[in-house]
Image (cartoon, rainbow, N blue to C red; front, side):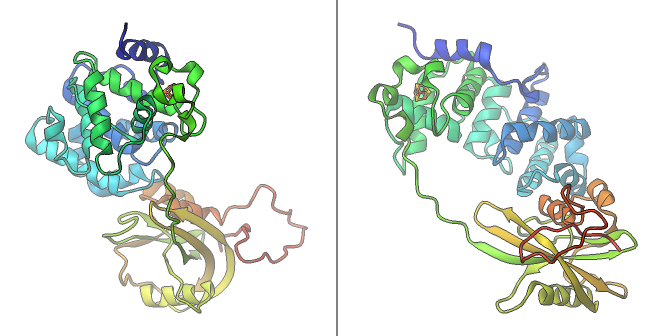
Length: 378
Ligand code: SF4
């Protein structure tokens, strides 16, 4: 009786997702490893369809590990801008430098896992896909597929080792990369979290969860801890069509990225009061709040920000007090010239007219707090 490897690989041969990092794998193993590394780091926390555009642009800019290693981190962050979770870009840059200093990519998962930012999953993915090492690469998708195939939740403490043991028992030594990618694709496209499409599954005949009719409830969902919501304000100070943007100092969230200055709103303060204080304390400038342009939200892994955007009128020359660097740039320039964070983009978008905004003759009505209203540069 054929083992699961055969139907899974047969399915993968015809149903593999077409992804740019899989196209035309180069014969040079180090180049293969570099491309796999970039794609795997980008795929941490981000969906494949979002990653495609960033990956393609990043590879055009940094075609080899040496190009990436030689680049300043500011340039790397700029190419990463909009993808979020910027610590990944810093780790990838550090990993490229470590590889470049070493002269060659580490060839095994046991060595790769020591590169900055690589955990067992990414190390296993690079080792199996680029170098053909028969090691597991267990991400959330693979974990779910194996839990269903074996009909049980992985144990809280030893679950990852159970899943890895299952993969090790099945992985073909000569097709390790394809096998791991097949499991990833099966989890991403067929054995999906809510309604697995078992009728299309190449492993349906051996799936214990399906045999027991419990495929939709394995693995059991864990209750998510709600992420705290923090209230913040972002300041739009515009001069002759240009807006103040700052480089966020590190370490911390969004370190090294750019955007209009923002800060937390203290209890009892209004966004307008906080905006005026932020400019005074951060830049030594006196200002007055003119209007609230809207409220944007931004989610991180463990917290969410609700950011009121306040336009101010200010005079004088700013000094950088606590901010690494600042510039006045038109929004389009900021998108092109600095590593604008996704949050920074959202804040600048509050200046753009909405498609359904009233015409010039229509009267503008004040909007309640949190509403989104077109702004304008002065
Ligand atoms: S049969 Fe259904 S539950 Fe089992 S692995 Fe396939 S898609 Fe997932």
